[in-house]
Length: 277
Length: 359
Ligand SMILES: Nc1ncnc2c1ncn2[C@@H]1O[C@H](COP(=O)(O)OP(=O)(O)OP(=O)(O)O)[C@@H](O)[C@H]1O
Ligand SMILES: [Mg+2]
Image 1: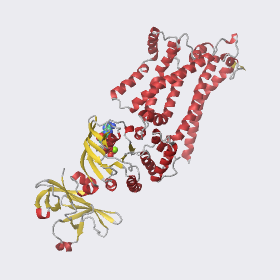
Image 2: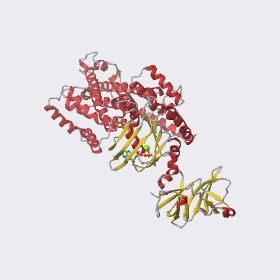
Image 3: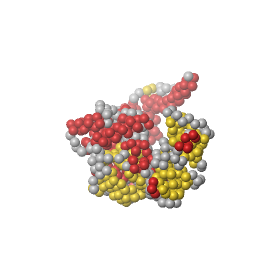
Image 4: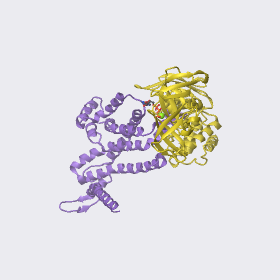
């Protein structure tokens, strides 16, 4: 089977390239986060240690290293992300369901999608600046509430799109069958459509979570000077200290990776449980 | 068990007139089939009855109770979907129990009923399987069981056998009939397969382009199709066309002259002189006659044709014969062994050919 052999080789090469792109930046970030002294032309740091980590995590206070403490920022980001996920999904699920399952006239459907899409259809900076002006008037700038709102605006389009396509992929007969045996519309949704669309909905929630954790531009315009999320801390740290930036970058990765692992477990169970995969 | 009555049902999808003035009554404990070609409105009719589609006009009665505006879950109608629509994330048990749990029936009673219904569909012991672990035929039976287990008053089936292979489909026809008779449930059965409709139905309603063309018992429709469309739909047939030339009142016979001058005798007492008619020749009516026997025959309805195609089918042979400008098909005993191009004589028994109006 010479053909198989070629395909195998190509697969391995692609995998290695993939690893290279994924791991090399990660590796260099990790090395940077523990580098106390690292000058050109050395390949590796001359001196390593966890000082920046401990400082960033608030475990030691050292004036020589600077005063970055990422724990509050991390918790703030996490809290905002969780609230954004809850809010966005509680809009995206009904909206997606309505768009996918109800007989809405075409023009209305288009209108709704455009409405969700509109904030993303223009260059982002001007949009955020305008949003800032509006938020200023109603006193939302510099508040966590304002930042949550801006994250919601950023992530809602994708969330609605993913939920819509998830609900569309579920054959309408499944819900109709539930109704024919006596289940109300709500019960049919909760017991049939919702569990079957769980993988897509969770994917959508993960996406929203990651978007919120990473969001910078909107947070920058709306949140300053009081709301400093992890990406904001990263930004201000990266100007002065690459070690802190590396620590924060790794911290930003942690919830994402954890989330992915949990979701993957959950998705697998869901598929095995019923999707016939 | 209940009587279902549909009155003047209309349903449009935008400009498409899916069904128009559809009325029929499904007799208690019997099977009524909606039969017709693809797109004729069978599914739409069924979905109106189930409550998934709101008719633009018309009424639906279940035992004289107007259910036209009642939501589907309150109608107490069981439905079997063409693609079964079993819930993939639930086991067979879960699928069957769902409707019963809604009704807050006790667990013992649920178990008892599921056991019973699985016996009826001959799948005892399959409670813990997921739908994807079942064959097509088994899924079909579970879908049937799910529609039966909550003891609905009537049952709707939308081409329930069309996803099965030919052999299994034929088997399931009999199983369905047997089960339906045993339970005595009223059923409305949608199919586009005339053979299936003839076997399982007590009453057939034939639809075309959203309108009812004819309804009656299988025998009535088979023996007295109202027009060429029904005649062609209910059995594989060939046609000759012409007009009523004269009557023989004492024999209740009609004499037809085809467009190319052939004279055919047949029976039908609902036609008038000069009316355009179709002569339906089913594949089993042509009787070959040997040339030397010709004198012995009555001399009517004897034709000379030419074999233009012969297909060997084992114990029978399928011939296509050219007569005048017509082409007829016959499925005849393999003892008649004609070559393509050979001239043959055959007889069309007047009582076996079907004369209908053209439209
Ligand atoms: N939801 C819908 N939107 C628009 N048109 C529809 C819809 N449902 C059915 N139709 C149209 O209504 C007509 C009747 O459709 P229906 O599904 O009732 O046919 P059918 O007899 O069940 O056909 P088949 O044997 O192919 O299932 C068709 O012309 C179809 O295109
Ligand atoms: Mg159909």
